[in-house]
Length: 416
Image (cartoon, rainbow, N blue to C red; front, side, top):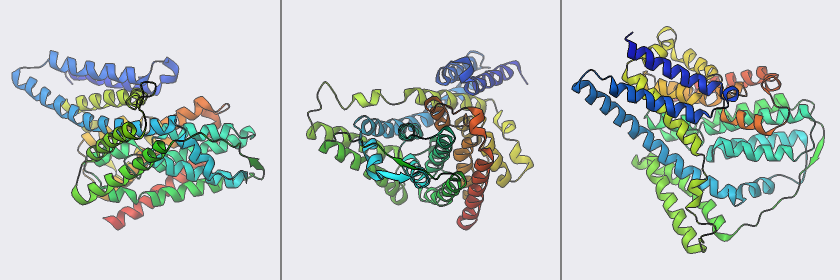
């Protein structure tokens, strides 16, 4: 391997290690991936072999930037909606509205799993996890029961996100790569929801007590209700427009965002104290910068023809087994770079097999607490939740993940 390719591969490995050991180095993964991602392209241009090669590198960079721009703009629109509704207390209000005042621990466990599954498909995983953590911490639960609740939350949040492009970035990436249709993705909700229910059954042993939920209500204005309805309408319009007219999701979500701005302007004073545009600034830009760095790195690996060796597992085993293992790997390796590498490598699979991969990389990260953003957030919020305490339920999680993947396989055979 030429020296430049070896150097670039080493940079990619360093970036991946920076992501895996973020909790050890205390250096944000967005900073690490953005540094190595941009550095790798700078080196490609500096050590280009000539004008023709420079033109090829430039075309590759333009392609990567175009893909990143589409992903970024969609996420900015979706995350702005969620940031607004969260700040206005709409999400907390919904939680306390649907939850009974007094309920058995077992029933609350199932209700929490259902809420996480539905909400995470509409909003981002981090918000869904934060809201669920607040609910769990408000309950007077012993540590063992609290850990069971949060284990279900992590699995349910990741499971809910796989069937809608608003719920999980890897699902969005696979959809934008034209590997699955938007209506086909919706069918993933069937096996994903069943396995969340099964995991709740497995975790509910010993849940015999009764809990009382604190009453909590935030003041909500008419404009907040309208924007909440607009968010749901935008999701439905995005699905319908794509299925009927092949309209890119990013266009419909930006259109919905523009209506949100106008609604705020004409239904409220949109004052300087709380201008609607400020909510773009409070979204998770660290997450967006992380995606930017990762996709630049993967684009670079494609440019130097290394990706085929990273996904050699598909050459030695069928996609059914390879996709399952990729889900397991996503509990150790961040699922965004893993998915990006698989998409860039040019792997040929049927729509049903791509569905299997979508489920695997979306839910597989739940196997370890460090394997997903939901797990990392939960670990920072729930006292007593560590790598070891979460690993006590690894058998339960593996069983749920395996049964869910088997369900997706059967569903894929029907679709194929």
